[in-house]
Length: 618
View (cartoon, one colour):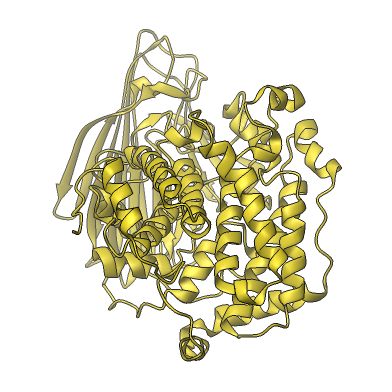
């Protein structure tokens, strides 16, 4: 019997399928015969990735294993800095991924000794959980937790377990028997025991965001490979499925990921990887990809693509290379529309985190043929659950896109950004969203609004009576109207509730986006209307870019690689100041953010300001 899943699985359904499942080649459902591997080595579009993996593997054979000293472990508690511990932690796993995949694909034992040393070193780590995910309360909090630090399970502990389990399964006959003994013992002690030997749950099991999928998806993949007791395995899979149910609760019917495209890849990607492992294990009896909303979630990248390879980056999203293995599998299984993709070695071993094992291995070993090209559709996309609007067009063959958002200020990886907008020309956002900042302890705890990336002061939003937007579920935007037009779209938002300004009676923001394809121009008219109980002391409109604008005579112009955006404003009512704000991007690289600040010279109790942005192509 094949279960056509339209609701989540019951335990009986899971148990029956697990107990009845015959043996199957795992973890990918295929035998890696010499002929199969030879064909993979000859596949033209995989040569760049294979070359990058081979380079990393050669270097890993001679380079010392990066140390993880106590001083680096402790540093997060002392300073909040994550990089000193995480860089060598992830470097170890990046090398391991490269060594394992090269040994498999090239049928070579040249790197086996280095591979085994790395496995042993990872099994010797005090904990697989990174300090940022367990040391916020210091030693006292660690001692009060129901499990000790070495049994704390975070994203990366779970990924480590699945990675080691898959490497053992793929290469087990070529490894020393100690490797199997050590991997099985460490995964049992560090992951399976704290999760499944008690009814107590980790908090992330109920998370409606990426943690539930990444943690439990990886634990589930490890269990399918390592757990020989089918009764216990049925219980493990049932608990995994319950967590994945919570993960899917974080998505509305529009399939939108509030965390952004990078966390779609991360969270939903691991949901898919486990779902496919479970489907293979049960010979298709349990197919989580048939669940409600999954097909709509799979379509998210194509819906939020600004231009080829460029995506909306609201919240903690950033530049996202989407793994082709994941995209092709979704296209073949669910007929998901494809965003622009390309075969590049962007996720080579040296750039990898633990999570890149699943992306790399599936992109390399899921040898699905590429689906046929799909033209990226022009026109309007509106995701009502997220309140994200996107309109995509072409001007003289150059992609041009406009987006704006509503929502509320307690979304996963939230930024205070209600009413913020983006104008993108040719893949470059000239009026931009900054995406994710550099992660640290304080980035996620305490007064997060002091970080430019997180505060509304780092977005194209007004400062009202000297106050930015506030954080919390009670601070939200209301979509008053979203109206398609023949040449564009109009969106009106009530943003009064995004601020906690006692003097503010009402704030509405209206966008009217119009595209003239004949004359290769696009225009955005932004209108802000304010009502106050009395005239505010300060009212300041702000616009954010990574491009320094020229400002003169009531105009500001941002020039990009393929076009420019010129904004006209009333210089008689607004005085201009350009602030250059140094900060860091998500990778810790220094960047300069340019914030155009237009201060009202004489704000009134009932006030309105209009700005006209004209996009021109070079």
